[in-house]
Length: 600
Image (cartoon, rainbow, N blue to C red; front, top):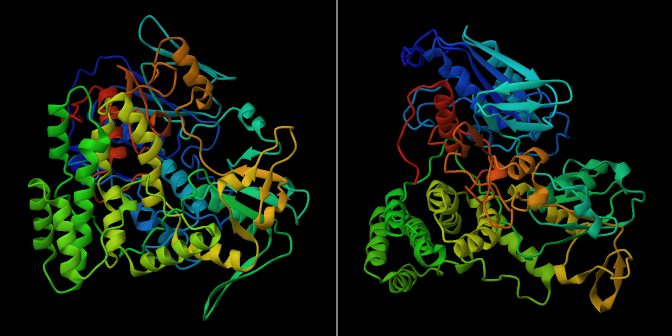
């Protein structure tokens, strides 16, 4: 794959007599691949020799998206929104690299297996294949001054020399580099963490039927999000069950090998499903919760922001603008004018009054407070299972309307479309210590429940599984762990205690607890090379671009808490923080012009 002429034209002319630059990338999933791609693309701008050492025990590219996982495990991002080839928009004005996005790649390589559409959720293993293919394309098209070395081993230790280099050690090799990027992806908890519950384990990969001795056992699934959906799929379709479409809806035909599944979570709140979207849709520009508004707040409050008092009102106002703007449009009025009215009401302190007036004016329900307030429980019903089912049915209906026809989905989408604003709020210690704990403890999980939930198809399947008597929703308080070391139980109606053979912790562990950090990160912390986010050793401190040292970057889920919203694959067509950060890292590693536009 050739670099575009425009990119080649960006060449600078530093001295060619300088020594070779030795770079290291630890972990080469999607985030590490963005850094590698940018290094290789920008290397045409220097005559110096570049050696890139990629450390990953697996084939570079797929990362978490293993190519051998079952095909029934699906992505929750539509095909056309994923791309490993950044265009000018993704790089905020810089020249990118031409290449197919995931949908275009699927048309080329997967169309003989099944039809593919740009707004479709496709198998996760296909994305793994696309990422592996991208790595091969990047390596195949290397400039003459670049050499990429893949070390198929895990890094056991990293030392920092007096000369400022990093020495990386594996079981097979020791390698020194001048610049280092650590992009190892999701943290994995130590095995000891799972010993607190008899028979419990954490869901890290797809299950196997051999994980359970009996097909009729009762299994608890702790979690209601994406990982829980994977576990349910493994225990149903993965055991030979089938979903069939009928006129009245979806039905499930059991194989007879499914366990009884009891689903619960600590919050007890369901996730909202991803709405249907038109292909290549772009989000509306923010009117109130803007980047400039956040920059002003940060300037006025150098000691940190209070998220609930200073930021949340902006988000609520933006949601109200989207909500009433769509309702107005559906009633034949101007959405632009109504949004402007909401903005004026916010700035004049009349937002609540305006909301009541709009509700009466359009004869519509008010905006559901639960979309922006995680403390408003929506599961007050005595019959929890029925309340869950009713919520899921209503939410599926809104998702079927689509993002361009559902006012509630349009309001909720603000959490996603304004995620860069949220990053500018959080990054570089933008919140006070207390507010940061509240944000990551309550609001970040709430955002995931609002806009990072399963596809609507997964919840349609849950309803079919409930009809088949396989899936049951229970409150967290109904799951009892015996103090005497006996196995857990779920207490059902009439105080009937059902023994649970196993509880599956179906949620991805965060990287805040030091015990969940990879060994090399904990080693770097103990040696004082990198620093913790908090005094108790939690988290990894980096700046808004992922820099932990002048020549060391740590990006991705490992630094969640120090930065925000690191759990996603890149995309082109609009500004992409993953690509922009990778571009900055590559330029600084190569000694090229670094864009100094600040991320506050």
